[in-house]
Amino acid sequence: MTDTVQRLGAGRYIEAAAAPANTVTTVHELETHDGAKVSGVLRTVPGASTVVTLMHPRQDLTHHVLVPELLARGFAVWTQGTRSVNNDISLVHEQALLDAAAGQAFLRDRGFEHVVTLGHSGGGTLFAFYHQQAGLEPGERIAKTPAGRPVDLAGADMPVPDGAVFMAPHPGQGALLLRLIDPSVTDENDPMSVDPELNPFAPENGFAEPPESSTYSTEFVTRYRAAQRDRVARLDAVAKDRVADAAAARNRFKASENPHDRRVALAPRVLTVYRTDADLRFMDMSLSPNDRPYGSLFGRRPDLTNYGLVGFARFATPDAWLSTWSGLSSNADFLRCAPGVTTPTLFVELSGDQACFPENAEAMVHALGAQDKDHVRVAGTHFGGPIAKGQPTGASLAAAEMGHWLAERFG
Image (cartoon, rainbow, N blue to C red; front, side):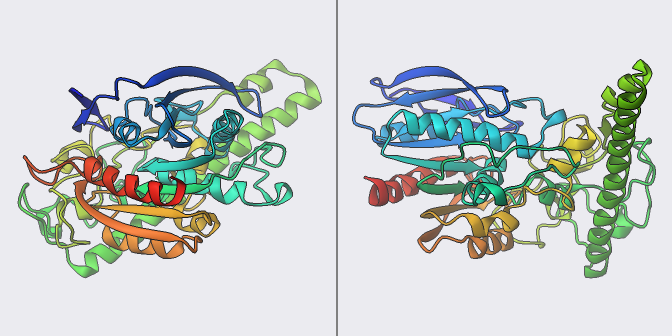
């Protein structure tokens, strides 16, 4: 097999083997329970009776680095997007569950003996959320999004997968942002506004010029994290007010059929959220120590990327903010959903992860509801890169662990 380069996340290029020559690839369009269209790619190799499914709420995983690794070990692979792939402004996780359900039902209909979910990064919480809701009686499933919009999970066919694999799952988009968001923003309309007492990039607060590690005091860390929750709560209040305004406009339109009210109800009023790349652990390597390099998922200079366009939750509708990005309102939280993951489970921790830190991994594994669960740790960074140049990639080491585990349980 020849080598190719596959991209996983901003600035992360991972060497990966090409798919086996006998791989058969087909593309499929699926209709969800609520009438949306999603697409996926099914790759099979001769004799494959187990299919591994990869999804992410926001990204296209068609060329994920693990695809050829799993195919080479004799497993079929299904990669699927949500209705919000590569455009998460309106991403509602409860709708993403309907997208995942369409894929799971499709694979059952294809006749595979075993269907196993594989959640990497944000895909981990998406699949934990899916397992949790699929395992409930239909009438017990979530009926409304955090914004109060109806979602018919009860009426959807949600097959329970036979197993679950998690690789470097972060604790959820909202839970992650709760540690990333810069609480020193004083004016949500001014990206440069700052409270000097909370500025993570001020030397007087412990910041050191990169790549030297910063040193934040315990008092500053405690105060900073409390302020992060406060900022998220303020943004939640803004989002809820905008949801209420839209609902009031819909009600006025129903009563009067005034076209202006209908336009008001349809106007999304997207939230712009500045400075969301400021986890103190990116700069202070003594916090949650592991093998990670200095910097964030977006680059080696959080003091710069924090102010840039690229980042988590930069733009979101009020519904998407509450469902996906709010660590206070989102249902898609790994720790909350993990007790509902009861099928055999493998959790692969990466030793240099910049999003799933050691205490996160320990808590998530402990919370998983499966009686049959394994926790392994391999050397690598969050996207599956190597710890150091010339070393094996984290993705290849993880794939070896997955291959053994899958073979033992599903043949």
